[in-house]
Image 1 (cartoon, rainbow, N blue to C red):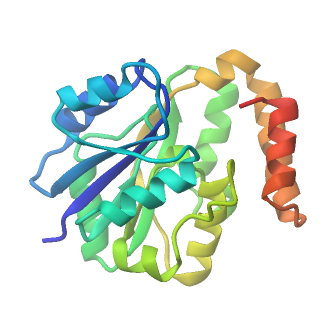
Image 2 (cartoon, rainbow, N blue to C red):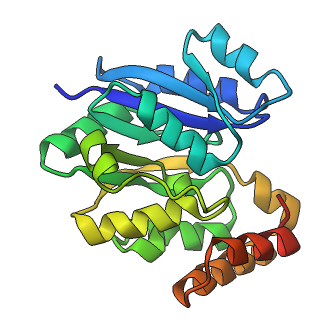
Length: 230
């Protein structure tokens, strides 16, 4: 049976890391999880202390989520890599569903998305994550991929400080079949609460459009800094 290495990039996430690690423990229903790697980009709060209390492996690395996830993949020993954002909570039995998809021949995929809110506006956009097209994908949906395919595609492009998930997933779609598992990962609306639902969704759409029209990683980062801020 294939083993899963869960890779979680973090930076000052003491408010979320405990809930995620607790959810992983409560929602995993098999012995397929080989390890959990929390890859830190230089936290100055209690993120690493909390993670270490759970007995997971912590790795220090330079900041930048693409760099952190690549480092986690390099250290991982499982046949399946599972990249998970710290504020996205996987569903019950997520590990079995990933392994089942892998055994069906899918070397990569994700879950559908729902937000931790009753907002009809955000629910409308979350509905589109059922559609198996790269425009409907994002890092908040998590990502499983065989380590073999990850290496073949050379991992995340570290030139992308933002949009690294989307850029990588577009390359994945060009290389192989992608599985959208029919269950929901729940993600936090913390950024929407800070910036406003419509405003933030508009700027995300503009970043998608700019990338589609050929803008490079620095242009996308400049737009993000100007309109959303790191």
